[in-house]
Image (cartoon, rainbow, N blue to C red; front, side, top):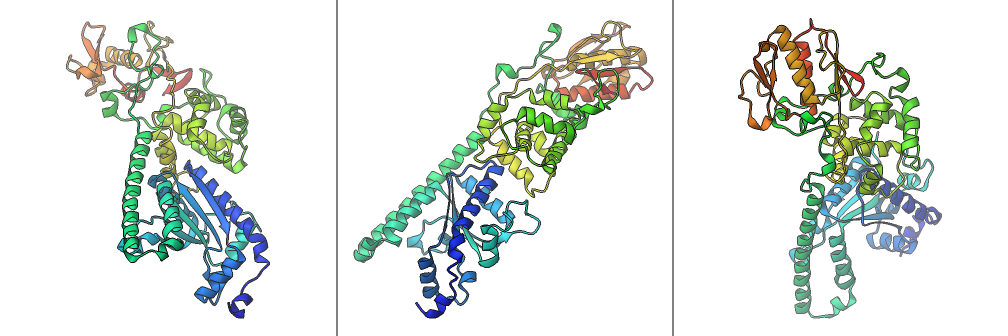
Length: 497
């Protein structure tokens, strides 16, 4: 080793480099946890000073601190290729990249089999900082003083192959001492082992896909509750049905409305979702989790409002469909998370794909939509949803006395509104293709039921409707008869108009 290489070594650096290794390990563990990606292991180390100097001498580096890019290095060992790719994506989006390669792609054929993504990062990307780097900490100092930090990402199967190959061939003294023929035989066996490793990774992918998209099993506690025994099966909850599919899903605002002031059960202003009401609600629901910052709680308010939820009572009612403990166990987070993150998980569990659509663009995370989908893989069709009966009441001078103020399911309310409007303004006004007809010609799978009008004629109204589709029909029927005094209340809160 030349004296010049020793001159480039600042021995004081080796006092704090282990701290940088710990900080980057914690950083990446948190990054994976935020996306609900559970690694098999996160391993970090700082290079020993003797190893650093030996590499500098061997490579004849002129500026070792900038040219040695693994003075601090970390390895993420993931359970599957899916998790490996997701982890690499998170790193690419969070850090500035100096290098992004898989050295195995450049191995000669007889040496193929190595599979590991090598990323060399030089710091956080502009605009990506969320106060994760400790100000004045060892990791921040490392990025300022050194040219790069290496992150390796591989699967458990690839890790097993690489560790054995490193021990027996790459660093194996015995391998160098045997004949060329035997070396070639070992090389072929390592290639065979690589093929087996690839097959194992593909099998793990198949298992992950099945876990993320299990065969749906209808549970008894997910059957819709019905308040009227004559309306059994009419969709008092979110019941699947072909008419609901054709009519589409109502927007979140249409699902939950209420202007916040009315005496007929409307929410009071003090119950509206904001920092002052959400913070204590989260403290009660998630007492053991980190409270988070005011900015984080404001983010939670945005999430809730994007779902059309306006009051704490509505939020509590929405989350009452699930058990928080079950969601927590399925998410299996490895680090401390905030109460807003727990809220995010529970809303995702309850609302599913709709929640991803409504909230994907909220916040500063560039790929929030993808991360929500990754997290939903842990929850889809595995969370017990306790469907509750949603009841409707009809008020107004033109509401029939027989049903006024009576609590009924959604499909029954559609029939009552169709009858009231048809009796007053004529049946032609209420006809809707595939949902309300003047003849018994609606599709059988919509489960049409007859409605007798005052003149003795009949309408046929579909009952196999999603709740959102039923509410769309309610809105259309009321809009077609603006001169009539009809008002629909849902669960005690004004819905239409």
